[in-house]
Amino acid sequence: MSYSYIDLSETILSRFRMSLRWLVLALLLVVILFGGLAFLFRGIPILFIGMLLFLGVMIVSLLIYYYSVLYLITEKKIYKRSGFPWRKVLSARHREVTDIAVVQGVFQRFFLNMGTIKVNTSGSIGFEIIMPRVSDPFQRRKDIYEVIRKHTSEEKRR
Image (tube, rainbow, N blue to C red; front, side, top):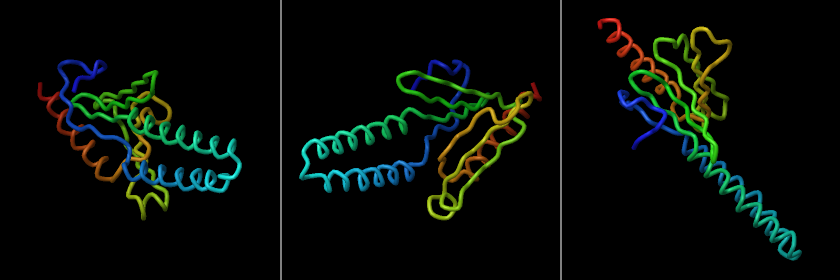
């Protein structure tokens, strides 16, 4: 797959999205809540149709959000692509990364095994790239650090 925002000399080493568990849980909650409301209002046609339409809009919105956010790790940079129909791409060079933090709430940690990865770079205040709802965030952070270590040491040898 080709990405116009990645330099042709870069190779994609890792490609991932938000946790599929999050998407399933969010869809389940939306269907239960708004499907239940639609069921309660089945005797009032305008409210019933309104709830079904709102349910459909919520499902489509969640799916678009899930598929529009993508995280890429290349041998040079970390990328976060988001947005539909607009597009926003954030990137950070490996040699500029100073810290990678993981934040997990109790529910995320014990039940969903997901969290937020935050990438900080030199010269910036706060976190440059924030990757919410990532599966197994501590392993992802370890993998990112390994890629950074490997490829920045190769750059130094050149």
